[in-house]
Length: 174
Image (tube, rainbow, N blue to C red; front, side, top):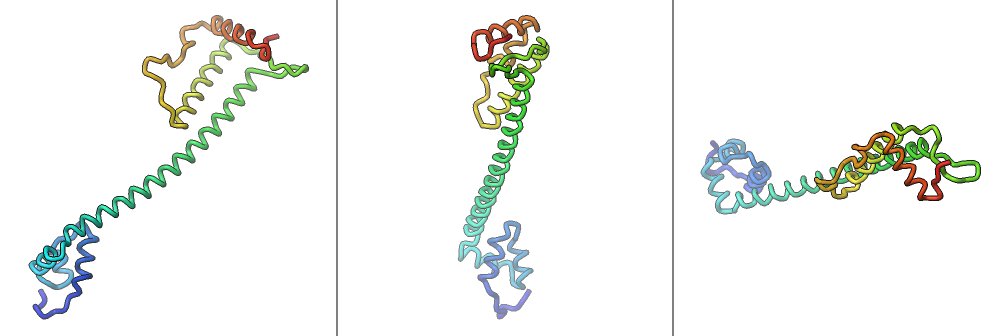
């Protein structure tokens, strides 16, 4: 250790101790060539421990803010990409399901089978659920049936879709 007459910049010593949560009195003493007792004396007299705690708190808050901002930006970008992809998929489903006739009426494609309709309905349900998640909407209740058409046969599903389309004149089946 250094002699008692050595000049030490205690402001630098304090800054080193406060900014390094792993620093000990012995480690600081060795680094600056002073006794651990003198480091402890200055620490107690000048409130280094409280200063260290406050510094650590501020650092944690800044890191949390940065992490939150980065996470929010990344999540927003994922949501934008997800919504764009689901929009494209919905357009593909609509194209597969419907066609505009020569007189401008939207009709169900004649070549659509009951199996195709079931797959399209399932794909659409998955897209809607994905959109809810991407937009942060509440999830469906636990007792909500995930697929209300799961128990229907292909023929029953096709009949239900046909009756729905027939009730809406703009979407009549020809």
